[in-house]
Image (cartoon, rainbow, N blue to C red; front, top):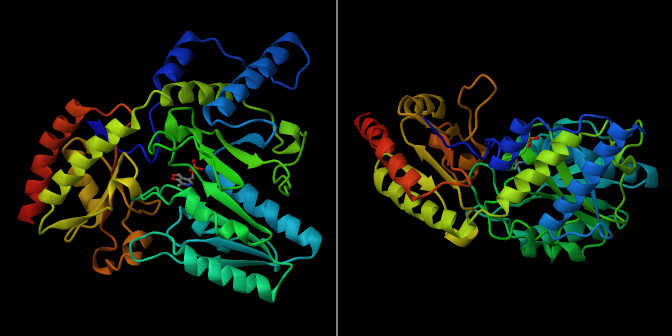
Length: 386
Ligand SMILES: Cc1ncc(COP(=O)(O)O)c(C=O)c1O
């Protein structure tokens, strides 16, 4: 079996595996004042420093807080701005895209208060953000309501397709007063060259299980000075940014996974993806399509495609039988195929239930690629006979 679902979650990184084997863990509550508690505190502090360094960030300018993962991070930031607006008697406009990860796309289904409104950001037919139009609309809203607070969710690397939406394109939006940008950075680490360059945004949220750390831990870097109201209140841990007993083992796994990630050769992965993409384009002729763009607009590990005939749940079984663990573009919890917002946006409505995603790992190499191509052959043959 070949695991090709890294965008869903990655296996543990080598350093994390070695550390788990060692059995040397800081288990104590870092808030405890005994020696074991102090050792946990020291470990968290040292690992925080490593994480700041990995992302070229300084503690003077950026807060860093850990949470359970990006879903919590996304909700924390939305709730925080809703609270800020409520306290100041303002309206909040949360901007998102229908093709965002469901953690963002379903925000409007939550009740944040009558003062919170939502706006769908416009995307071009080629899947890029229409920054010109979005800037115009937001400026217009701000002129009509000068007190308006705006929170823009920006999906840096798309989880299904691997499209990259550059952070530098956000600079124009940043000129609008009282506008804050939350970057969903979950799919960036190790998958684009600039994954450590956290620019233009105000908050950057990560899930560490996407890059080799334990599950149940994620983090957000947040510019100092931006308004913040904690969602999790309680014992005041993490300087009150996120209460709840801290997670020294989770944090250690993040620092270790990042050490491995820093060694990943993104350019090499990009070249392998280009070869695999060419293979898919060739093999899918007449039976399906790949959704992609030029390499500089795509990440280094994802191929998003669909077949004309098979819904993704059925196609997944076919791939699985050939030893290939890939993923449906979108599936509900029961595993049944549902319409993909990506394919609907791209006007591929007739195939909207057929989206599939293959995402390979950080250590993928030429040998893996050749093996994959061999294992793909019977799948494509079968697809051609349908
Ligand atoms: C782009 C993106 N944002 C947010 C999330 C949510 O992360 P988690 O499920 O770790 O909370 C994911 C997970 O797949 C994602 O890919």
